[in-house]
Length: 168
Image (cartoon, rainbow, N blue to C red; front, side, top):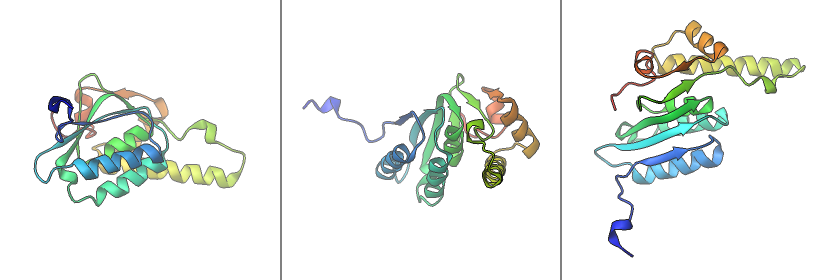
């Protein structure tokens, strides 16, 4: 095998796709095995979402990872829904100038006539807003408006909002 075709351990990890238990588990395995003791590992990231429960599990794991400060996530294109939750799990966050971020309220297809489901969805939405507020410079009312109106954010706005906190 040609030595030039082997992957350099410092090459970025590319995550392009849906957030689910399998993809988050794979991302954890890659981060665990490739994050250096010193220096930075980039995770180039784009995702239109998936399961917020998988994104929350990833956040829980990453919050306890000893070398989390040596990882920088780089939004390369669209980041939305559970992808945004996953992106915000990282301590060091930046974006390509063309990247777009979209928030939304809990998916309407999950609504039900069952009052218990309505309570669960309202609590899920509250916790999601709380998480976004905790990880950004945004106020709860602004987050709710962004989610309701499905506004896109990009460029300098991502830094002003605290979604991105490191220059590319």
